[in-house]
Length: 273
Image 1 (cartoon, rainbow, N blue to C red):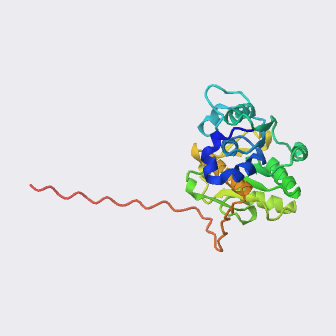
Image 2: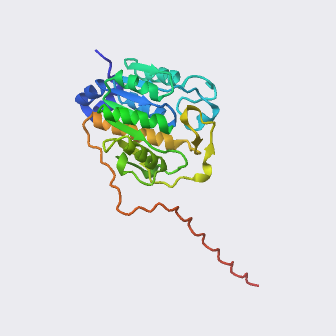
Image 3: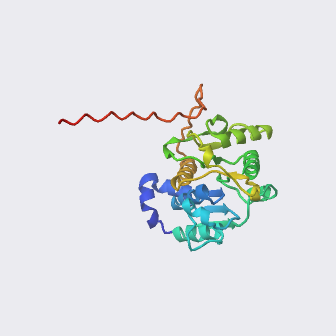
Protein backbone atom coordinates (compact mmCIF):
# COMPACT_ATOMS: atom_id res chain seq x y z
CA UNK A 1 0.00 0.00 0.00
CA UNK A 2 1.47 3.32 -1.06
CA UNK A 3 1.82 6.14 1.46
CA UNK A 4 -0.46 8.95 0.32
CA UNK A 5 -0.24 11.10 3.43
CA UNK A 6 1.93 13.63 1.60
CA UNK A 7 -0.90 14.07 -0.94
CA UNK A 8 -3.55 14.88 1.68
CA UNK A 9 -4.05 18.43 0.39
CA UNK A 10 -4.30 17.17 -3.18
CA UNK A 11 -6.83 14.56 -2.06
CA UNK A 12 -9.04 17.29 -0.62
CA UNK A 13 -9.20 18.83 -4.09
CA UNK A 14 -9.40 15.83 -6.44
CA UNK A 15 -10.59 13.00 -4.18
CA UNK A 16 -9.28 9.43 -3.96
CA UNK A 17 -10.44 8.67 -7.49
CA UNK A 18 -8.40 11.59 -8.77
CA UNK A 19 -5.34 10.40 -6.89
CA UNK A 20 -5.79 6.97 -8.48
CA UNK A 21 -6.01 8.49 -11.94
CA UNK A 22 -2.79 10.43 -11.42
CA UNK A 23 -0.98 7.51 -9.81
CA UNK A 24 -1.80 5.31 -12.81
CA UNK A 25 -0.62 7.86 -15.39
CA UNK A 26 2.68 7.99 -17.28
CA UNK A 27 3.90 11.43 -18.42
CA UNK A 28 6.82 12.09 -20.76
CA UNK A 29 8.64 15.40 -20.19
CA UNK A 30 11.15 16.32 -22.90
CA UNK A 31 13.50 19.17 -22.00
CA UNK A 32 14.46 20.09 -18.42
CA UNK A 33 15.38 23.73 -18.88
CA UNK A 34 13.54 26.70 -17.46
CA UNK A 35 10.11 25.45 -18.55
CA UNK A 36 10.57 21.68 -18.35
CA UNK A 37 12.28 21.51 -14.96
CA UNK A 38 9.42 23.28 -13.21
CA UNK A 39 6.82 21.38 -15.25
CA UNK A 40 8.38 18.04 -14.28
CA UNK A 41 8.39 18.95 -10.60
CA UNK A 42 4.75 20.07 -10.70
CA UNK A 43 3.81 16.79 -12.37
CA UNK A 44 5.62 14.79 -9.67
CA UNK A 45 4.16 16.85 -6.81
CA UNK A 46 0.67 16.20 -8.18
CA UNK A 47 1.19 12.48 -7.57
CA UNK A 48 1.67 11.19 -11.12
CA UNK A 49 2.95 7.64 -10.67
CA UNK A 50 5.25 7.22 -13.66
CA UNK A 51 7.44 9.70 -15.52
CA UNK A 52 10.05 9.68 -18.25
CA UNK A 53 12.32 12.73 -18.30
CA UNK A 54 14.68 13.60 -21.14
CA UNK A 55 17.59 16.06 -21.25
CA UNK A 56 21.24 15.73 -22.25
CA UNK A 57 22.47 19.08 -20.96
CA UNK A 58 24.53 19.98 -17.91
CA UNK A 59 24.12 22.99 -15.63
CA UNK A 60 25.74 26.17 -16.94
CA UNK A 61 26.18 29.36 -14.88
CA UNK A 62 23.77 31.18 -17.23
CA UNK A 63 21.01 28.71 -16.23
CA UNK A 64 20.86 29.92 -12.65
CA UNK A 65 18.54 32.84 -13.33
CA UNK A 66 15.61 30.58 -14.34
CA UNK A 67 16.19 26.80 -14.18
CA UNK A 68 15.14 24.71 -11.18
CA UNK A 69 18.19 22.38 -11.06
CA UNK A 70 20.78 25.15 -11.51
CA UNK A 71 22.80 26.22 -8.46
CA UNK A 72 26.19 27.80 -7.94
CA UNK A 73 27.36 24.45 -6.54
CA UNK A 74 26.51 22.11 -9.42
CA UNK A 75 27.90 23.62 -12.62
CA UNK A 76 28.68 20.86 -15.13
CA UNK A 77 26.34 18.32 -13.51
CA UNK A 78 23.66 16.57 -15.57
CA UNK A 79 20.28 18.32 -15.32
CA UNK A 80 18.53 14.98 -15.75
CA UNK A 81 20.45 13.48 -12.82
CA UNK A 82 19.69 16.47 -10.59
CA UNK A 83 16.01 16.39 -11.47
CA UNK A 84 15.82 12.62 -11.03
CA UNK A 85 17.20 12.88 -7.50
CA UNK A 86 14.80 15.73 -6.74
CA UNK A 87 11.70 14.01 -8.12
CA UNK A 88 12.44 10.80 -6.22
CA UNK A 89 12.99 12.81 -3.05
CA UNK A 90 9.50 14.26 -3.53
CA UNK A 91 7.94 10.86 -4.25
CA UNK A 92 10.15 7.84 -3.51
CA UNK A 93 7.49 5.56 -5.02
CA UNK A 94 7.65 7.31 -8.40
CA UNK A 95 8.51 5.02 -11.31
CA UNK A 96 11.06 7.14 -13.13
CA UNK A 97 12.93 6.59 -16.38
CA UNK A 98 15.79 9.00 -17.07
CA UNK A 99 17.13 9.62 -20.58
CA UNK A 100 20.35 11.62 -20.42
CA UNK A 101 20.54 12.64 -24.04
CA UNK A 102 19.70 15.58 -26.24
CA UNK A 103 16.56 14.90 -28.19
CA UNK A 104 17.71 14.09 -31.71
CA UNK A 105 15.47 13.27 -34.67
CA UNK A 106 16.99 9.78 -34.85
CA UNK A 107 15.99 8.89 -31.26
CA UNK A 108 12.41 10.17 -31.19
CA UNK A 109 10.83 7.00 -32.56
CA UNK A 110 12.48 4.78 -29.93
CA UNK A 111 11.63 7.26 -27.18
CA UNK A 112 7.95 7.26 -28.08
CA UNK A 113 7.92 3.48 -28.51
CA UNK A 114 9.13 3.13 -24.90
CA UNK A 115 5.73 4.33 -23.67
CA UNK A 116 2.84 4.14 -23.75
CA UNK A 117 2.42 7.65 -22.38
CA UNK A 118 -0.79 9.19 -21.13
CA UNK A 119 0.61 12.62 -21.98
CA UNK A 120 3.61 14.04 -23.84
CA UNK A 121 4.97 17.37 -22.65
CA UNK A 122 7.21 19.21 -25.12
CA UNK A 123 9.48 21.72 -23.37
CA UNK A 124 12.15 21.86 -26.10
CA UNK A 125 13.46 25.25 -27.21
CA UNK A 126 15.29 24.02 -30.35
CA UNK A 127 13.07 24.00 -33.42
CA UNK A 128 14.18 20.88 -35.34
CA UNK A 129 13.92 18.37 -32.45
CA UNK A 130 10.67 20.05 -31.37
CA UNK A 131 9.13 19.54 -34.80
CA UNK A 132 10.15 15.89 -35.02
CA UNK A 133 8.83 15.12 -31.53
CA UNK A 134 5.52 16.87 -32.20
CA UNK A 135 5.08 15.22 -35.58
CA UNK A 136 5.76 11.69 -34.39
CA UNK A 137 3.82 12.04 -31.11
CA UNK A 138 0.88 13.43 -33.09
CA UNK A 139 1.01 10.58 -35.61
CA UNK A 140 1.00 8.04 -32.77
CA UNK A 141 -2.08 9.66 -31.26
CA UNK A 142 -0.57 10.86 -27.98
CA UNK A 143 -2.09 13.77 -26.12
CA UNK A 144 0.44 16.61 -26.33
CA UNK A 145 1.04 20.00 -24.78
CA UNK A 146 3.81 22.12 -26.25
CA UNK A 147 5.50 25.17 -24.76
CA UNK A 148 6.09 28.02 -27.17
CA UNK A 149 8.50 30.92 -26.79
CA UNK A 150 9.18 32.06 -23.21
CA UNK A 151 12.20 34.22 -24.02
CA UNK A 152 12.15 37.99 -24.35
CA UNK A 153 9.00 38.36 -22.22
CA UNK A 154 8.22 39.63 -18.72
CA UNK A 155 4.44 39.50 -18.13
CA UNK A 156 3.09 36.12 -16.94
CA UNK A 157 -0.52 37.34 -17.08
CA UNK A 158 -0.35 37.19 -20.88
CA UNK A 159 0.05 33.39 -21.06
CA UNK A 160 -2.71 31.55 -22.89
CA UNK A 161 -3.64 27.96 -23.84
CA UNK A 162 -5.10 27.03 -27.22
CA UNK A 163 -4.64 24.64 -30.11
CA UNK A 164 -1.24 25.17 -31.70
CA UNK A 165 -2.88 26.08 -35.00
CA UNK A 166 -4.97 28.80 -33.34
CA UNK A 167 -2.03 30.59 -31.69
CA UNK A 168 -1.13 34.17 -32.51
CA UNK A 169 1.36 36.89 -31.50
CA UNK A 170 4.10 34.28 -30.92
CA UNK A 171 6.98 34.04 -33.38
CA UNK A 172 7.96 30.53 -32.34
CA UNK A 173 4.39 29.27 -32.61
CA UNK A 174 4.05 30.81 -36.06
CA UNK A 175 7.21 29.07 -37.27
CA UNK A 176 6.27 25.71 -35.72
CA UNK A 177 2.77 25.91 -37.24
CA UNK A 178 4.08 26.54 -40.74
CA UNK A 179 6.62 23.72 -40.55
CA UNK A 180 4.15 21.23 -39.08
CA UNK A 181 1.60 21.96 -41.81
CA UNK A 182 4.19 20.80 -44.33
CA UNK A 183 4.49 17.59 -42.30
CA UNK A 184 0.72 17.03 -42.54
CA UNK A 185 0.09 17.76 -38.88
CA UNK A 186 -3.27 19.38 -38.19
CA UNK A 187 -5.20 20.47 -35.12
CA UNK A 188 -4.87 18.45 -31.93
CA UNK A 189 -1.76 19.77 -30.15
CA UNK A 190 -2.35 22.07 -27.19
CA UNK A 191 0.07 24.99 -26.95
CA UNK A 192 1.02 27.32 -24.12
CA UNK A 193 2.01 30.70 -25.53
CA UNK A 194 2.17 34.38 -24.64
CA UNK A 195 0.49 37.37 -26.25
CA UNK A 196 3.34 39.59 -25.09
CA UNK A 197 5.52 41.34 -27.63
CA UNK A 198 9.02 39.81 -27.78
CA UNK A 199 11.80 42.18 -26.80
CA UNK A 200 13.94 41.63 -29.87
CA UNK A 201 16.77 43.73 -28.47
CA UNK A 202 17.44 40.87 -26.01
CA UNK A 203 18.31 38.41 -28.81
CA UNK A 204 21.78 36.84 -28.92
CA UNK A 205 23.27 34.37 -31.39
CA UNK A 206 24.68 31.07 -30.11
CA UNK A 207 27.20 28.57 -31.47
CA UNK A 208 24.42 26.51 -33.06
CA UNK A 209 25.06 23.37 -31.01
CA UNK A 210 22.13 21.02 -30.37
CA UNK A 211 20.08 22.68 -33.13
CA UNK A 212 19.95 26.02 -31.30
CA UNK A 213 21.22 29.08 -33.15
CA UNK A 214 19.86 31.93 -31.04
CA UNK A 215 18.31 32.77 -27.68
CA UNK A 216 16.42 35.60 -26.05
CA UNK A 217 17.01 37.11 -22.65
CA UNK A 218 14.94 35.65 -19.83
CA UNK A 219 13.66 36.62 -16.40
CA UNK A 220 13.39 34.22 -13.47
CA UNK A 221 9.63 33.63 -13.29
CA UNK A 222 8.46 33.48 -16.92
CA UNK A 223 9.78 29.97 -17.81
CA UNK A 224 8.42 28.68 -14.48
CA UNK A 225 5.04 30.21 -15.33
CA UNK A 226 5.07 28.45 -18.70
CA UNK A 227 5.98 25.20 -16.92
CA UNK A 228 3.14 25.66 -14.46
CA UNK A 229 0.57 26.22 -17.20
CA UNK A 230 1.86 23.23 -19.19
CA UNK A 231 1.67 21.02 -16.08
CA UNK A 232 -1.84 22.28 -15.33
CA UNK A 233 -3.03 21.23 -18.80
CA UNK A 234 -1.62 17.74 -18.30
CA UNK A 235 -2.96 17.28 -14.77
CA UNK A 236 -6.42 18.63 -15.55
CA UNK A 237 -6.80 16.41 -18.60
CA UNK A 238 -5.56 13.35 -16.71
CA UNK A 239 -8.30 14.09 -14.18
CA UNK A 240 -10.91 14.56 -16.90
CA UNK A 241 -11.23 18.27 -16.15
CA UNK A 242 -12.04 20.63 -19.06
CA UNK A 243 -9.27 22.85 -20.37
CA UNK A 244 -10.70 25.99 -21.94
CA UNK A 245 -8.87 26.99 -25.11
CA UNK A 246 -8.37 30.63 -25.99
CA UNK A 247 -10.27 31.86 -29.03
CA UNK A 248 -8.17 33.30 -31.83
CA UNK A 249 -9.37 36.87 -32.47
CA UNK A 250 -10.72 37.81 -35.88
CA UNK A 251 -8.39 40.81 -36.08
CA UNK A 252 -4.87 40.50 -34.72
CA UNK A 253 -2.63 43.48 -34.14
CA UNK A 254 0.97 42.30 -34.36
CA UNK A 255 2.51 45.76 -34.29
CA UNK A 256 4.86 46.72 -31.51
CA UNK A 257 2.98 48.41 -28.68
CA UNK A 258 3.71 52.10 -28.39
CA UNK A 259 5.35 53.21 -25.16
CA UNK A 260 3.14 55.18 -22.81
CA UNK A 261 3.47 58.91 -23.18
CA UNK A 262 5.27 60.61 -20.36
CA UNK A 263 3.30 63.27 -18.64
CA UNK A 264 4.87 66.70 -18.80
CA UNK A 265 5.81 68.06 -15.45
CA UNK A 266 4.07 71.27 -14.51
CA UNK A 267 6.26 74.23 -13.79
CA UNK A 268 6.45 74.84 -10.05
CA UNK A 269 4.33 77.68 -8.71
CA UNK A 270 6.36 80.83 -8.07
CA UNK A 271 7.26 81.31 -4.45
CA UNK A 272 5.68 84.28 -2.74
CA UNK A 273 8.02 87.04 -1.79
